[in-house]
Amino acid sequence: MSESSAAAAEAVAARFEELYGSAPDGVWAAPGRVNLIGEHTDYNDGFVMPFALPHTAVAAVSRRDDGVLRLHSADIGGPVVELTVDGLVPESDKRWTAYPAGVVWALREAGHAVVTGADIHLASTVPAGAGLSSSAALEVVVALALNDLFGLGLRGWQLARLSQRAENVYVGAPVGIMDQTASACCEAGHALFLDTRDLSQRQIPFDLAAEGMRLLVVDTQVKHSHSEGEYGKRREGCEKGAALLGVDALRDVPHEDLDAALARLGDDEEVRRLVRHVVTEDHRVEQVVSLLESGDTRAIGPLLIEGHASLRDDFRVSCPELDLVVDTAVTAGALGARMTGGGFGGSAIVLTEEADVPAVTKAVEEAFATAGFKTPRVFEAVPSAGARRVR
Ligand code: ADP
Ligand code: MG
Image (cartoon, rainbow, N blue to C red; front, side, top):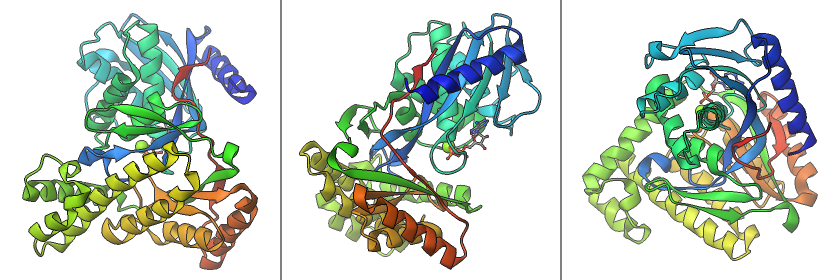
């Protein structure tokens, strides 16, 4: 554990004791993530390739056996929120507390009635709403803490599934399985190649620093308000495409059959574009995996750029800020760049030679200033560890 994460665990434990009057049973951490490649594929049963950020949600937790659930976030403040585990009702809570409460609800709904309450205080360094999965970090850290404290014996992928269920049903957000799996299962120095159909996974070595490269995250600090409705429309469009092609999910359309599939879709241009993105994106993930496994890391740059073009032109989930990051970074010499996460704002990633980091960063910042956009937040993303107990 790094010094800063030890200090974070210490601070969260100390605040827990102030709030609840005794030391926590333990402290856990779960990271946010960026997705290297494989966007909008997870609800099409396809491939994704996220890695964990050093940024984490850190939760101090004690178990309770009286049916009471108490929640507090250092980042929200205000008084402790007190709920009862029997009184948790899906989609009844529009506050942040729906995420941790939803995990308790999902565990109990899955038959883990032994989860009889908890005191929780947490703090997170994952920026919220930046497309870096602050919500999954929050869910997974709570799921892991309760798994340990109540001896549930669940594995990472199971905690991810239950966290996703919490977000889908309890919070009411129709998200795929990528974010929670990344937070629960990633390993330091690796990206996670995940098949979202059967949840099989492979850790792919991804140590850019050793090869003289860096991966920057550019948080545009914008979130366009229509994003949720548009996400739902893309999901529906993908389902329509699968139905028209007679497959369970677009994952079942082989890349070599793409042209024939597009021809079968006739003049439904909207669905054709969605299908083309998903099928080519799954293929790009497989190409990135084989390039990384053969040590040809720099060659993934063009695939990132292609992936962005596909999200911009075919899937249509980019926005001027994300396009500006990608165009500017590539012009300034980056090896590759793409939007990451759901789109309509949030963050982009930039793959660059170490020596070009200052020039690329400066170019992006200047382009944003010239365009009159909010100043972006740029930081380096080092592939970090997944969820773990830290104290
Ligand atoms: P993302 O997961 O991309 O960051 P979401 O909209 O899915 O964005 O999740 C953000 C929400 O998660 C916030 O609005 C808040 O409800 C909750 N959240 C994230 N971080 C914290 C935190 N540190 N404390 C309390 N709630 C948080
Ligand atoms: Mg989220």
